[in-house]
Each structure stands twice: as structure tokens, then as C-alpha cells.
Image (cartoon, rainbow over the protein chains, first blue to last red):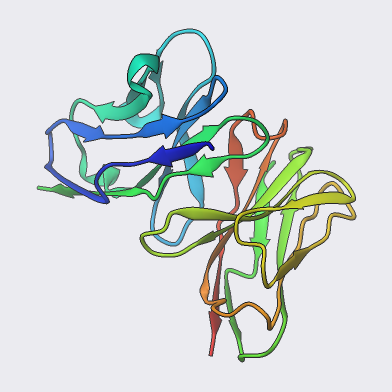
Amino acid sequence: AQSVTQLGSHVSVSEGALVLLRCNYSSSVPPYLFWYVQYPNQGLQLLLKYTTGATLVKGINGFEAEFKKSETSFHLTKPSAHMSDAAEYFCAVSPTDKLIFGTGTRLQVFP
Amino acid sequence: DGGITQSPKYLFRKEGQNVTLSCEQNLNHDAMYWYRQDPGQGLRLIYYSQIVNDFQKGDIAEGYSVSREKKESFPLTVTSAQKNPTAFYLCASSGSQGRTEAFFGQGTRLTVV
């Protein structure tokens, strides 16, 4: 069965610090992988996606993620956190005909 | 502007009443989805549709019903059989059966009292 595990339901960083949000997946077929961001009481917005090709994927707002097949991981990083990055982040896998989401990680950024 | 529209944004209903949430898209997408979001549980798939007049149950379909009579529209009915309907509901669409990114509406927060 396909699944996504996000380690850490809450992550706190200081403004300017590295952001690292962890995502591991399970998929029986080559996966398509996504990171989404959600601000309070809003829908989800796509940050970045991996389909095929280059394993380091750059997204919006300075975020990037690296697909590591050997580790079945797709961790999200940003070199320097900004206050506006505070939100909930979801990793998702699409093995075939639907998106399967992780339980989300809430990112807090302190001044 | 192309996008996906959910209405209403907030909805209050009395226990035992059916309620229908609207979802419309003008992105010409074939696939549409309904998710339920509860704190700490991520997004759980209720129903999805890959083509007009066809839809499949997701992980938590009990107490919900959908229709897909038009490509643009995928309404969700929360029936009185749903034991705990208070939640945030998100509709999404994608171009090709889930292998591309999904675009989300702004959500409907349903409160049943």
C-alpha cells in the first residue's frame, strides 16, 4: 500500500535558520511526490513536485526538496526561514490515480 | 481567472440534516477530489472522480455522497448518516488522474450543532 510519513507534527525554528521538514514514502510504483503549503483556513498551494529526472527539485518561496530513492525520502528544506513561512506543510505521493497525503507538519518561526 | 471555487466558506447545520457542499472548476480538469481535514489527521480522501458520470469511494466515504453530472462540478452531500460531520472540507482537481499536481479550493468549514 502507498503511504506517506511526515516525521514531526510541529517544527520550530528561528528566523534565518535552516528549515528541514521530513517526508518518507512507501510506493510500489515509481512515485510522483509533492509538497504543499496551507495557511490558516485556506486551501493547499503547491510548493514543488518531483515526477522524473533531476532529483533536486526547486520550488516557490526558496524551498527545495531532494528525492532519494534509496532512503524513500523527499525532505523539504529552505536555507533561511522567514516569518511568512509559518504554515502547515503536507507531503503527498501519487502512485497512480489519486493523491495520498501525510498528516502534515506545522512550522513555527520565531523572531 | 482559472481556478476552483468552493461555496460556501462557512456552513452551519443542525444535526440530522443533509447538507451539500459546492465545488466548481474552470480548469478543464478531468479528475476531481473531496478531502476531509481534521486537526492532526492530515487530508483524508472521501470520494474522487476521474471522468463525468463516474466516481470512486475514498478512504472515508461512509455518510457521504457525490455526483459528477458535469465536468466542471463535483458536489458533496454530507448526510445524516455521517456520525461526526464537523470538519474542514477541501475540493481539488487535477489534469490527469492524479499523476499531476492537484489544485485546491479555499475549503468549506462545516459545523453541525
